Image (cartoon, rainbow, N blue to C red):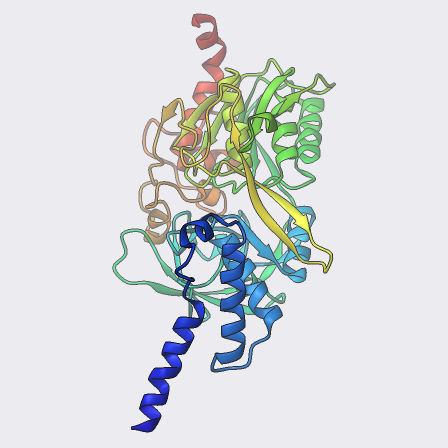
Length: 435
């Protein structure tokens, strides 16, 4: 009984310790230091009375992490290791499974898998919910902690518990970590003079890769039209989004960012350069996996009347994160502004709506039900059909043009959006004359 009384008194004592003083409560409420005083009290209380030993440094660091993660899905505290990984992932190859993830209402969501990566090959798709990582629930797991757990040594496995859209039960997907490729641009001639440029992400080499491939093709064949494929491109570096857009624009505004301060607006404009393709018809493909930098490019080309957009509404990640290094090697990633298209449209939570909203239609079943299921959440990585090796003809009326090579034929016949893009880019000059 005495123990019970002591416990009650102890709890009451702690409660009284953190209770605000009754005198001058209104003035204290407005005091800018009141919140800091309360924070200090809680830190001291936890350090002294928590069931396990914990240092004040750990408590403060965890408080910083929680503070940033509560702001939005993209602001975060970066440990020294996290900071290094962020730098590596933007500049070169790294080890992992190859997905872009986000956090939405406490759920870990796949924004998009990166083409030709373990995650892509394992069948992960835009919109998948990652419920567990190696058996650990992701409900209380911060975004950076989740990324850290998913990445790992080359060749090791990670088990993700995935819930697909429309599925009743989650499934476990075991994925072997691999080297994520740095090649971000792929090209394929659809027919003579019509070139498909597939950009899988925006790293520091993207614009150079794109310009090199365009120049290489131009040496052999004059370009009559371009199909720019940004589907399931999770984004990347802002400067690369600007320079890729500038490849197809003479000059003028491409995107601007605007923070809380009206005076903080910053414009990003194109400049005239040798090698720009400013008069070649372009059709751009987008879907729900097109995010961030990919949305900047799509929005700029659409607003500037430079390209027709086909596909489905993009992801809507239109916020700007500023990364700041701290003296101990750690850093913070803080949302400081929003992206706006040349016409002043905010991308954030709205996305880019295509000019022609055309859902992807899975090809007739070749006995591969998994292939059809990959596209149940708006869009999956549509270029998947490039790799399945099937050479069967599509339905009547959906065949590739004569003279098309086998790789392009397979792509066109199995991808209705690509097929429409090809037809539209050939007639686009006529459409422009009507305008």
